[in-house]
Amino acid sequence: MALIWSFLLAMLSVSGVIWGLSTLFRFADKRVEQWPALWSVGLSLCVAIPFLGLLLLLLPNPGSYDALAVFSLHEPLQSMGLLSDESQTGAGELYVWNMTTVMKGVCAIYSLGVFLCLMKLAIGRYRLHEIIHKADCADIAGQDDVLVSPHVQSPFAWTPFGQPKHSRIIVPESYRGVVSEADLLNILIHERAHITRRDDESGLVLRVLLCLCWMSPFAHRLFAQWSQATEIRCDMAVTAHRDPDMRRAYAETLLQALHIAAGRVRQYPAASFSTHRIRNEKMRIRHIMNGTRPSYKRGRDRLLLGLAASIVTGVGMLTVSETASADPSAKKGDWNWVSTDMVSGRLTASFGQSFDPFKDGETRDHYGIDIAAPTGTPIYAPAGGTILHATTLYDGKPKYGTVVVFEAENGIVTLFSHLEGFNVEAGQRVWKGDQLATIGNTGKSTGPHVHIETFKNGTRVDPAIVWDIRTP
Image (cartoon, rainbow, N blue to C red; front, side, top):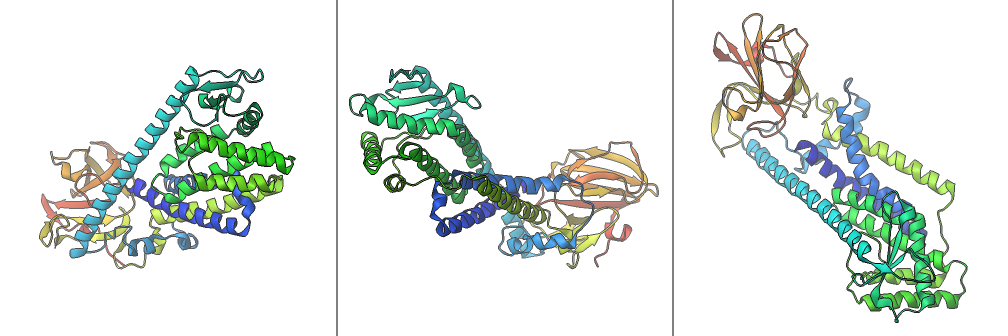
């Protein structure tokens, strides 16, 4: 859940920043309206940056780097309530529990949305394949890759992924006797430009990315801008080097296609020649009538775009990684930060009486200590000893989650619960410093942490005293 929430927050933030930067660039230079690469790269970064940032969390962490703390947005996000502050006590603990519940609900909705979007995309591609399979040859000027179907309202080009030689152009049956052969040939030039540019394949990849970003309105705007830019570029393939009368005739063809569709264009996952988005069609007509020529085609422009994307990716992934991991170097000065031979993190609950985060206003007997840290934080043996238990169900009590029980050579027994996983097995001999497990959020828990209980002669005692756990 923590990783999904981190990805979701990062995706929303990154997509907003990317959209803002792209929009500023668009205001500065109107030509970017016809540059599909800018918008496709922007949408790709909305997924790549959060993914790469969270991937950094899986790499070995050699220690804390003060220089990287500047990238962390942990404190601002926590102050806005977007991250739960498990160091709070009293009524604050109830707030943390409520916030964690909200996070779980949002993550569940997001995951369900991704699944439904991917299913919708898959069903759309299947229906598209069925339409093409049932279409008839159009018999237009001997072009055998042009098909006609009564089930579509606007022409489009379709390419099997990775097989441009097997591309097809589908024309509506309603165009027969309505659109002249000259106008239809212009439409075919437009669609062949899509095939040459491999827009259908690129669009499929971007649609998959959009499924992962379905909650972000900024990502949808980036995709819409890419779609519009590809249509403008393909219009240029038709109107390039044409005189004003020919450009006007092509614009009239577009208007005629809009009239035939009459707002009934069914949006299959492929680019249609005309759509119901009147604002976009007006922009296309403006470019057609102005005789716009392609911009940003030189290698220098692509190099600069790649350099800018690399810089944004580097800064973005460091920000995501430092924020998600709640960089310890930014928290060591906190009153509740502890660093022990066993685990480093924030002391969120002490031994004895404490407020119950699951029952409003009530207290409980807390028989151990809680140390919060990011999921996956390692837990080490505080001394030499033997593993008594390493299990996902301890003593028949699911509330403990995944548990490791360790007995030191002096007979002191220590239990670690709510773990993500363990690296040992029952009966195994371990030495001081050996990794036992990693922090998780299993069982009855309000967030990623480890609950530590210590037994001396069969009686629970304060682990902080036994293992000399102190705050600075």
